[in-house]
Length: 584
Image (cartoon, rainbow, N blue to C red):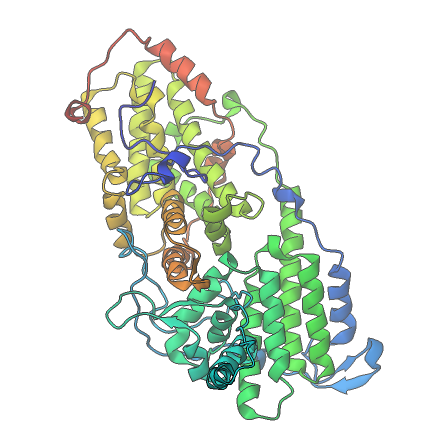
């Protein structure tokens, strides 16, 4: 059996294969995440090179910086050094920026919804992901004429300047370029009357170089888009190598301009490190970064070394804390019968507050690269927080279904359904679309909807269902979300759908160059989500209600729900159709 409603949904990470092949229609959101998908979350390993980090912390840059002096140790011997204050280091990391025009990005109906929050021109240090670069794609070497005839030699002389120029272009180390005009000459720009970003395509290296021009105020949004989406065409490890190479190319030069380029490159590198996902913090990356810290110390760049070292240690501590927290997670062992009290023991707005608090805790943990890479790879190991958030949605939805359908009396089921409708009303006021849609998907699910309900109850539920009407690409929901002021928890299923459409509908390369227009669309979608993550709710935890939820772990499976639904109302008994069903 299937639901008569076209708006039934649940939040799932994997898009429907059939749906992705159907042009112009929304992706299917009907694939479930298994309950075992988080089993690997506690398996994040602390790198053995942690000892190297600790060693550097203790010897290479001995001293916290609070005192006037520190010392260098190890292979360098004992050398007195002076470390700057913490405030001066913090100030040095902020890039000045001014007002910049917010370009339209992407195509399709979601464009107006996903607009960049960085239109004010600010470039905060710890806001988002880093940049990326590819190897330069080279054309085949030019063929020189082999004939010794006079005509052939004349032709060769005429062609030689052009061919030498072409060969020189191919052999240029783009990571070493500093002239803005030369950099721009290697980038494919939009036509005069085209919409979208100025940068349309370029080699990975030249896009990276362009992103390190952080002192250009007109490039703030470009830099953010690059830092947010670089993982789609280069790995963080390779990006760090290229940034390291560009920094060391100019850091020892007496030329003021080259020194400026090296400092800009370094601060991009610091952001890359600061915004690494914990699953990306591999031993190879740690070793590479600690080698760079040692190089900075040896070259006398102590303030830069201290900044980078602090970022590395902070990341390692975060990873250790995550492993420790996961190891302490209690197992939800209580069953339905052990739950204290009933849902009616708590006020609807209090329940909505606690649902929002739980959602927010998980939502703020999601790292932007997890969402970006899921649309491309659907890898649970690379998206642990996104996977956990989605499983939370599914568990909540099945928990609601189980509570209702386990009531033996029809009036008790009706009373409980009305209670959840009241909770949804308060969730909407809180801008919590995640729990709102989790409950709505439960009330609109086939095992629940097929039962007999009072006409007033059914019609009241239909009003809420209009928000998730899948016709016109969720137009009603998009319009509601566009008007929301944070704090807000969006429905991630639709964000994943939009990212998947962009990924499948646009090529990664254009004429062998990275298609940056595609990355701009991805950036606009993700930046909208990041805007919601930056404003937090101020809610107090109610342990009684949290205990009642029991992590939503004690719910029935789909098959058991259908068995109870059929027991309450066998198949040969018809029920009254709602107005919406009669229209369809």
